[in-house]
Image (cartoon, rainbow, N blue to C red; front, side):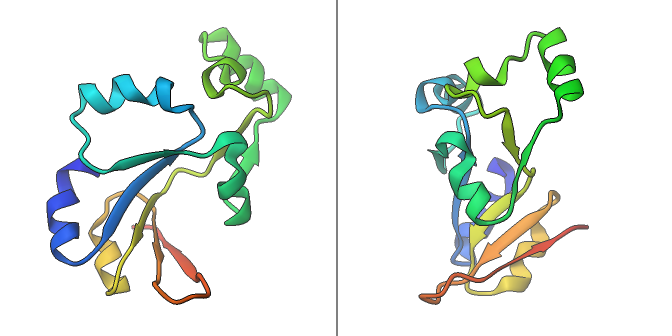
Length: 121
């Protein structure tokens, strides 16, 4: 997303990333990749759940993650073992502009009632 941030901002988009990781866990990645958009923390993937974008890892996949040293309970600071579906998120005046993204994209309009739609290339 960092590579297209300027183009999307020129179109009027507000860009952010949402992660289940606590802010302290995200900071090294933000600094390493010089991320210039906001990175928000979604504890327990609660916001992802409200959008219908959260899933719980099955026990057998949990064991695979642990075998690679990826303990989501430790990494995310809580033990739900849930993840958000991978997606880009932006609030855009022209929804068709979301098609610029190379990853699944969610466009959220600016109306008081939040509506969203996901595209996949």
